[in-house]
Length: 298
Image 1 (tube, rainbow, N blue to C red):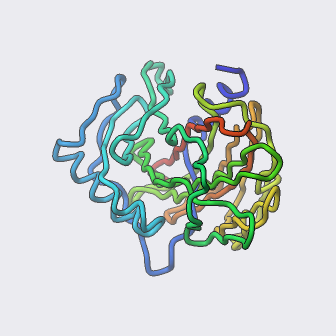
Image 2: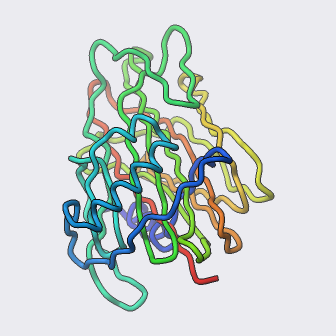
């Protein structure tokens, strides 16, 4: 694994959280219950009482983030960083992990499917908040949501939507939208969250085209839009940006992190970003999608 990728993963899990799009005022996603202790070696707990409860809670929250994700059967895993809820059949990157007490283990990072753009292009299917243009356009390819409980204090739900475009200049273009919501388990406080992406070893080399947001942001809560205008306009997503967002754009292409941090809050915080990359015509593309959050008693 390259140094930038290793650094990115480490930063993401140190920060431990992922922002998401703010849910409607009437939709208050509750904390995952029950809390399950981390496991040094990943273990599937889907059929246990705790796993069934965690999957049900995550499914209800996913319905507020992405209606399509709410209907996917879910698996529940424990690893060295906590609990991870994913759609059934998700594949993982396995990353070494050392906690604050020096305990060593393995963390699971969900991956997108290994994909090549279809010929002919699939019908347009923009997600909620996204727009498709007429003529050459981004075409929907895949989407899913995950839930990460990084500590006993906090949780993060994060999603992706993937779009592709062909026939522009002899290459294929991919658009990866990432978004999520982080919150504190009652009565604790949320302090940090992050979401990210990096290409897997199975992916073709990715060249940067565009990314949004372009830089760090700080200030009071306000609704902003992350969006791409190259090589095609159209993909955009609104999110309630609060406190401080910090981005880390790296190499290889497609390596990106967005982290939220701010004063401890009992509310929820959203995060979102979108990137565009270029790969050779007909080549496979795949990303690993880290995410996490951190909190404290106050």
